[in-house]
Image (cartoon, rainbow, N blue to C red; front, side, top):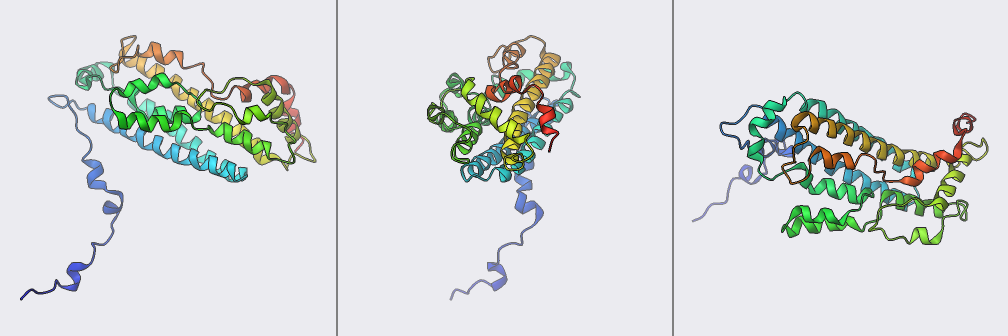
Length: 294
């Protein structure tokens, strides 16, 4: 005759810090390939795994930013942008940590990496696509990996946070910002190109923010515009530090993923995601004086 299990045996194990965060599984994911394992390879692996985790969190926050803008809640979007900027600072500050590894130490295990490279990061390419650096040529980086290619393609044609912001402005106060209809229907699989009409719309926003009577009304929209610019700027700062780190580690050697290494990275330094937001500065002149009236 079968007996029923004791009631205590049917209870799930109590949730702990380790079980909630899957700490044992997390700590089992670092596998140096150099033989014998080089001391610094663990730092290299963990640093890049942490990058991937922060890329995931940034994507999570940026998607929600777009949701808030679609709901015409720009103030809520600014809160998330503050978090995103903190993550960007962490990404920038992680580079000096990697630079505690000397080039001779990296060279000692670089051969074990084969053709693998950060150049192939699917999440980073998704982030680039989503934010406006649309380059379908990057799809070939994943080779025959159909699943990775499909993940990247999801964001290639997706509207960027700037697209969502412009659409939000178009709904404000019976079209006060004069957003052109064709700008709202642009091909979102293409990067943002300078649009002087949108620069004029942004100029209206910035100047109204500087007016004592209407400035408070559009402050949240103004802050979203500044956050988008800051996101673009911090991404450029990260790229610059990344280039210098690569030059410090391998000089002008070719990257393990087949890129030209630092040479390729240098070509990305002057690229901007949102040219309208940079161009509006040319029109404002004494913008600081306007802002000082509030």
